[in-house]
Image (tube, rainbow, N blue to C red; front, side, top):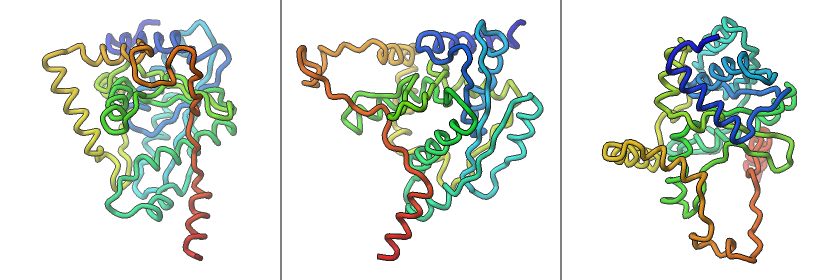
Length: 280
């Protein structure tokens, strides 16, 4: 069966490369796709479904949407699109939005905390739906920007892995779009006639000032060096530890083992802590 377009062919090849190089999907896997309704998660769901029907191995897909509880989210577009394509969908209604509003003031950007709370919900749902892998829609631009953000503002050299095992070993998070650019994901989602749904959070969509700066910097560099994103992505897989300043990497020393995933908070735990604070 031929691919629908040259764009789909290119994206499918990049995702196949990611799956092969990083052992993201194996025979018999049940892959749970975090489907927010944004361009990236739609592109991920679409291309994995295309590959599922062509792959030499057998794996199944189940889409999961974490409803943060914000008013105005267009659930019907999500459910209608999945039903029309025969995609299995589970919608989990949560109080994440309410919890965030209780914790943060009006000037704070809630995206980081929201992402962690949603990750916790995904972990719990993965067990419920019998998923062996959790697929997230982070693309190449996310990897590159995260690297620069950590270097510039956090004093660390790290991005995100294509395959991540949770601390307790119970869950495997995969990012099959690691070699797909944001522009490709956007174009593919639109070409596939998938309804791109924006988040209804009061601050979502407003990138942090730091991330805006990094995006602009990369865009400016691309003008003179069109292949700069490819070079930076290759750099993430071409590390020379002996040419860094981390003394834990010295020959003969024991490198400190860091956790593979930070603790993921639970909405109920946060709200419980808030009640205790109010009583005090």
